[in-house]
Image (cartoon, rainbow, N blue to C red; front, side, top):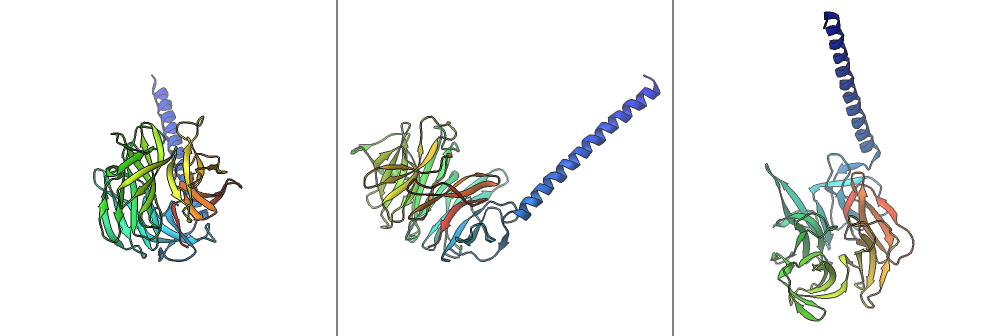
Length: 339
């Protein structure tokens, strides 16, 4: 190869490298521009005071990018898309009632993360903390604030398949005692005592009597709605194919996700409401697959999360099967409505 040829090859290589470098710079600039635009055009989030007793407010985990991502934030229910007030308290899952909250947190370590459950007072101060031996999934507080429950994955990380294991705990927020696993409860299935090594529970929802709760029981490839009794430490099956139940404010209906035949394995659910007196099921107008434990905004409306650009967005739909789904708030999850 002549000297001139070598120089031409070198110049060509330098040109290619310069083009690659320029493309990288432009790509990074475009990403930064999109990120800045998202922050500027998305919900405004500022630090402030967040309480669990401010009437007419929604408290939730903020998913918008920025310094307040994952913090508990609040907005008026009447303006869910308005400016958000951030608390500084970060949660992966959250729920609250009667001025008591439960916050499932990640504790970031040098090698891996661990998890914990915090019991919060109305001003988000920690009253108690418990180790959580898996990835947080669901959280609930009883209407009186007396009990808190949470579910974590201890094997697998998705409800869509069958290869997963969960553990559900219930804490007495007043006495400070803990039921580490509902698997210690006696099971009555179809009127008879039942035992199996593959039993899993998840998705607790409480009645206001500080005794009764509902949850999902899974065993032998099937799921059941169970009614639990905290005094007798017993659960009784009521209805099949029920996951992540949510009790209505009047205690007569359960909103839940139901597996529907013919849907994709990774998106198998539709939202339903079950009348506990008649066991009649009503499909709701949301036609997308919902992997969430819905929340009752009021006696007529349920709210739930669906995947969004920055994690999750909140939608609502009438609880009687009419109407249509409506976007409530972007970049939000784990919502609570303060009466």
